[in-house]
Image 1 (cartoon, helix red, strand yellow):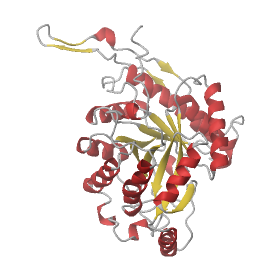
Image 2 (cartoon, rainbow, N blue to C red; image 1 turned 30 degrees about the vertical axis):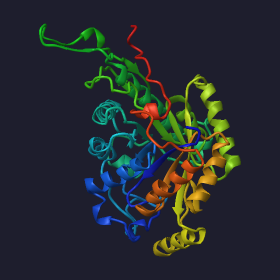
Image 3 (cartoon, rainbow, N blue to C red; image 1 turned 90 degrees about the horizontal axis):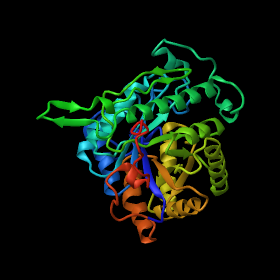
Image 4 (tube, rainbow, N blue to C red; image 1 turned 120 degrees about the vertical axis):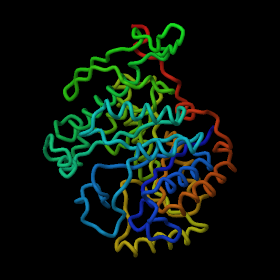
Amino acid sequence: MTGPRIAVALDGAGWHPAAWREPGARPGELLTAGYWTDVVREAEAGKLDFVTLEDSLALQTVNYLDRPGERDGIVQGRLDAVLIAARVAPLTSHIGLVPTAVVTHTEPFHLSKAIATLDYVSTGRAGVRVQVAGRAEDNRHFGRREFGEFRLEDSAEPGRPSPLRDLFDEAADYVEVLRRLWDSWEDDAEIRDVATGRFVDREKLHYIDFEGRWFSVKGPSITPRPPQGQPPVTALAHAAVPYRLAARSADVVYVTPSDRAQAASIVAEVRDEQELAGRGAETLHVFGDVVVFLGETEQAAADRKARLDELSGEEYSSDAHVFTGTPAGLADLLLDWQGAGLSGFRLRPGAVPHDLTAITRGLVPELRGRGAFRTEYEASTLRGLLGLARPANRYAAV
C-alpha cells in the first residue's frame, strides 16, 4: 500500500461537544454494546487499519485541564475501553482494536493480561494506547499518592525535573513491564500432552524480575504469550517529553501538527529521540491526528460545524488540526502531509455517524481512486497491517 495508513479515534458521539445532539446521533445507546459494535463494523467496512477507543479516570471535559463534571451540556460517563474492545472483537474479523489505558495509578500486571486476553479473543488484532493521568481529581479516585503540580508547559522541557516528566518516565517503565510480561511465557510453553499429563513446560515460563523506581514486578504472567507476541503499543504526544516516551516505548505515536511544515518538524524531532533511545533501526510509525467535519461541499461542512458550535455556545477548538471540507479535500491534505514523513493518520470524527461514514464511504473511495488505499485487508493481525514483524521472545534463548 503506497498511501497512508488510516485509523479512527472513537470517543462517544464524536469529538465535538455537541455531537450527541446531531441528527443521527444515538446518545441513548452510548452505553450499549450494540452502538460500539456498529461503529467499529463501519470502520472495518472501510478497511481501516484500526480504531482507538478513548478512556479516562475522570468524567469528560472539553479541555484537558478543565474541572471534570462541571459542564452538563456534554456527554458524561463512558464504558471501559478494554472491555468494549473485548466485546467487539469476536464480532469483527480484520480491523485492529486499540483501547486507551491509563497507566498512572493502575497496575501493569493487570493491563498486561487484559491486553493479552484481547489479543486472544481478537485472534491477533489487539493494541493499546497508553495514557498518563496528571489531574488531582484522578489521584483522588485512588488516594495512594499525590505527585505535585501537573503543568502542561513542562512537557516541552525534557531536561528539567517535573511531576509531568516523572509520569512519562513511569509510563516508560510501565510499558517495559508490559512487554516483559508478554514475553514471560515462551511461545511453545504450553504442551497440553494428555498422554504424559504435562500441560505446560515450566522451563519455558520466566520470572521478569523488573526492578525500577516505581515498580518491582516478579512475574511470570498468568496469560500465555499473546498471538502477536507483542501487541502494538501506541501513545499520543504533543511535545518533547511525550515524544521521548514514544521513542523509547511505542510502535505508533500520534502527533498533532497544524500544517505540513510542522508535521516535518515533529517527525524529525521524534526520529532524533528514537536514535537517542537506541531504536533507530526499528519501525516507529508517526500518525498525524486530524479532527474532521466532512460534507458534500466545503460550505455544507462549514455550515454543519457552525451549527454544532452554536449548540455548544462556543467555537470548537482542539489540540489537533481541525479540518472542515469535502472527502476529496481531506485526501489532498493527507497525501500532502504524508510527504512530510507521516506514515498514517488517526482521524477523529467530529460527529458520529456522519463524519465516520464520510470517512469510510467518502474519503476511502477517494483515496482508492488515487491508488492510495487498500481494497482488501492484506494481513490478519494488527502487527501485519502495520508492517511490523512478530518479535522474538527475549527469554527464549535464556
